[in-house]
Image (tube, rainbow, N blue to C red; front, side):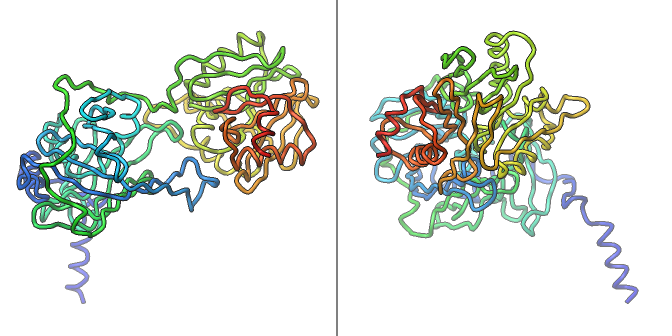
Amino acid sequence: MLVGLFVLATLAVEAPINGCEPVRGGPTATQWLERSEAAVGLPRIAGKVLAFQASDISILTNQSDRMYPPYIHAPNDTEFWFDVATGAERNGPAGQARKGGWLHTASATWRVSDTSLVPMPPAHAFLKTGREMNPLAVLMDWRNAPGLRVAERCMYREYWRTVLTRTDGTRLFLDTKTAMPVKLERIEPHYLWGQVKVEYIYTTWWGSGTIVLPVTTARVVDGTPELIRALGLNRNTVRVTDSAPFMRVPANMPDMSAAANPMLDIGKVDTTRLADNAFLLVNRAYTETVVLARDTVWVLDATQGEARARIDSTWIAKLFPGRHPVAVVVTDLAWPHISGVRFWVARGATIVTHPMSREFLQRVVDRRWTLEPDALERTSPRARLKLRLVSDSLSLAGGAIRLYPIDGVASEGALMAFLPAAGFLWAGDYIQDNQEPSQYATEVWQATRRVGITPERTAAQHLPLTAWSKIKELTQ
């Protein structure tokens, strides 16, 4: 018994802190990468191209009808070619990728048509998160990484993994026994959460004797899967070939690493007048509405983060000179639609929203931004969320603005705003098109009928100023 207690005590003393321990001696980081490339089979397909098919499932945590699971899932069957000589990957929809699609490396993306390439920085901002779903591309991208070193050895998924790191702090976990890549991990800046922990997890390895790939790869953000790639086990899923489509990377390859997501790219913001004290604030990605009523400025939705909110604030000062309290109406919770809320909370604004939004908005405001502190993080004492909730309907500024829940099956928890004097309906994100009918637009039209209002004009985050008669025509 005493011996058993001694052994347990010894194990407790020797157990690594946080599941990790330092590495003393052994292979260098470069040698570990070489071992890993050999383990997955990259040297065996030198001079060849790897072709495979996969089902990519995007899990849209940022656009679902609730901010908790289950989330929207968007599956896509995709074809990929991976050039071992250059590290370039070409992909596109299954059955169509040979005719077009995308060619990309770690630093650039092109639109492909036959043998022509068109540089696409905005597409690179979208696609770069998917490149690391391919562990072969990861290993090649790490070959010449600055500051490459062996950091430590960590217990991860019940086994010891050797962790490599580089100058930017990204960590690559290799199985200590076999050198197979198990996980890529880093902290990334995020427009809503400040910073997030991103993990690419490679599981259930399968090989044909030539090359080995994970049957499933997951991009996990703060513990929640956001993208899952499934290869399946069909022998035809993965093959080594010489007959790949055009994949020649230009010699003067541009660096698109800093390209912005187009939905967050602010660009020029301009105005459209609705009435004497009501304006649309418009850029390429998002429209918002600002109204001065009873000495308060009402901001209908706060999109695109702090940078956009600062520009909106400048416009408000020009359009409505003098000092005015500000209230922000949040019509729905899609993440890009509320990413300016923290700025307005820092400025003391009241947030007006549906009761269903209370808990999530509190999480957004409570989040600590430690990587790059924003305006809210820098307030002292820290500004608090001031809420006003809209359960049934709410009349603001003596009736100058009226808020109503849309309350369709696809629009639960969403609001619309009516400006009677301007005959204008702000539809948030719930009318997206003035050419084709949609469930969203129908539910907005039904809501106007239910509450007894008849707009003359409407606009929304992605809809220009439009005659209401056009929306009515589409819904009928």
